[in-house]
Length: 361
Ligand code: NAD
Ligand code: ZN
Image 1: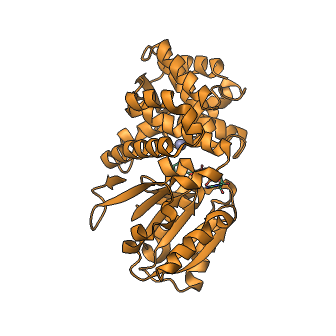
Image 2 (image 1 turned 90 degrees about the vertical axis):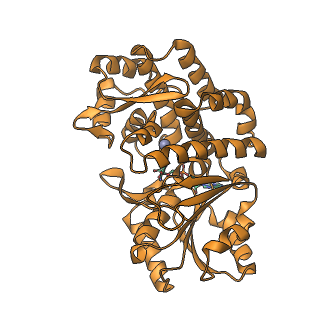
């Protein structure tokens, strides 16, 4: 398990991320956080038939009364209307301040449920049971919650930390291949920004990871959570080092926004975006071409795209300037100094950027 310690957290100032097989039925881990023996489980129409009964009956064996809120599935439902469905259910069931909300699902369910927990009765306990690789290594760690607005992704939200995260790697057996690979993009990112040894390990274990070998999967999840927790604890509200977690994301968001939600999975856009960041780093003479070759090979071996879609450099630029990471007009880039070390740069010459944008599509 991984301990996340944040000095903004009240009470015991940390929470635990448990990682392993079959944690869904480890109710002993949940019980300390269910003092009222009642909980609301928020999930979606895809995950409910797979895992909801398993969780509910395990809880029932321990006399925990639950009800489920089953949301429609998809990023397009990460909005105000869906959030209101959660509030409706909580009020109908007269949930009180001590009743925890359990998010059972991927990042969409986690972000919605976390935001509902942050604002229902001005805050109720929140437990994450992430069921996608992306949610296990990324969205369930760090306390960002929220919804999309028609004018921008993740624009409405709150920082709100869970009491506990249960990452059951056995749930990944039903995850579609494409979603698994998208999650691996974020795993590779952690190696690139923070841990060259982990990157080496990923080069050696990519096939086992894609085959969902339990031990390999658990290690990859654990190391990813450790790295994210370490970075987030240094900078919970993203003023400095936390920005490094956005490696490949400035380019990636431009791809996602230009192609429309859903055409590219987030992790796929991050993969192509990371290669763009690496190319730009090479043009700025920060990183060697041996390193960029290794990066490209690893993403290729993971079955991820290493080129962006063929849109004009001008359209990429336009889209990048709309991104949240733009500060006072300058685009903030996360660049690579070598495998295992990234840094921030907001002085990239536009000419070089345009070269990267035409070379990497
Ligand atoms: P997702 O939640 O949409 O899940 C992907 C798909 O897999 C969905 O169709 C889902 O129903 C299905 N699914 C989930 N678990 C499954 C399982 N075990 N078996 C079979 N199918 C399963 O997508 P995601 O990639 O998990 O999360 C993306 C979201 O996370 C985005 O909205 C993004 O903004 C957000 N996010 C948040 C943070 C954060 O810090 N809060 C970080 C990264 C991403
Ligand atoms: Zn991401």
